Length: 572
Image (cartoon, rainbow, N blue to C red; front, top):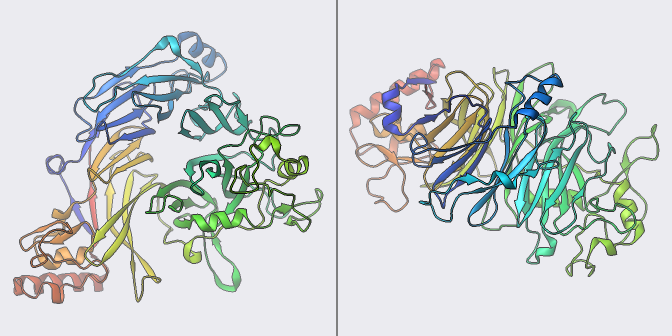
């Protein structure tokens, strides 16, 4: 790997920017607002609005600490006054054209508020009406260390969160809006068993909004199998947006909640797979069909034998298929989990009440046997395998784990590529693509760059990507960084170097390595992401210089000292 050291002046000139706030930390909640040109940030005791073009300029801040009496009560309970007894902002969503909805831990007294941000990008409103603070139980965690997720749809908030001080009652909870609050069954390990939530998404199922479903991604202690011990399984849970709960059973509880296991493993010899069992983050890459986004996930392993991470990609069709498969069933404490062989009641549990399926107007109209079956069988028997039945990226025996992922779909000269930006727990970002070998079905991973974003190696805890502005926004406990998606100028000053980089963002324009644009003149453009072969592409350029570049690359590759990958060191 060629290591390119970049000084602060070089980075500033290329647009790399860092933001920090005195007396705050934990920039873990990011909301990208393209329309207003703002990056809204939730941190310790502060709400922040930053300029998307340059996050170091024109910031706005709201100081929102927990009341003194709450902090003192928190401290009396044995918590650290400075590290834990504060208001850590954990929820930040668009609410309407003029307001955001936000919640924080409130020193173990969760609170929520409406944040006025104005209706246009140049509006100067940025304030909270502190007389309208709401109870945040079931919306924000009590403890900042507890993983949670939420999504706001219409005026309803769907949250995966702990609803108690001790972090023992985890639930998927719907609040706000005009309907009754609704949640998962309480204290039933078949539903949720000490879950760690990592993401939530709304996906339409048909043209009928009554069929819309919400998907929650989490990892939890496995309930399946006597021989597993305390094993962690990764899950995806589904529920219907128009679920009103049951009439006599599961009152104000989900009647459509189901969950299935996510598999991310490398096939091994004699049928023994290497499993990456702990899901860390999930990213939905939208396609032309809103009903079928690609689901990118990052996993790590809880194994004591080796350390590793992987990226697995799932299709929504495979996820839906698992929820249409057999239910997992167990007769008693000493029995194994098996596929349910009996008659499944109608309408099938997990189906939404709508004209599309059965004509039921509400879940309160579901027959009692349907609700009872749903209560006792939330788990599906079939697991969900990734596309290709294996990860698209694996890293083992390295000194880091994957923590975050965002993906940008990029059109290059020889096809369309999904560029993955993967955050790690040592403050680096990997820029990776999958390229076809013999065919588009047989892919190989290609590491384009490894970016050391935070000098203090703080784990990356949040990421947002703006394709429109070609910028990446990265949060950690210590700072926020802004990076351009492409750094074409670092790939040298020759056609061969540019082509060998195999970066879909970059192409040789006849004079330098610059951003690839599909509408530029083909006469001068040189790019070969799939093969990285400059022999034919660059034959018309400075021959001596190209031959020297190729010879240096080949000799370095043979010695194992250099590849077309780049490493960029970024300091703040």
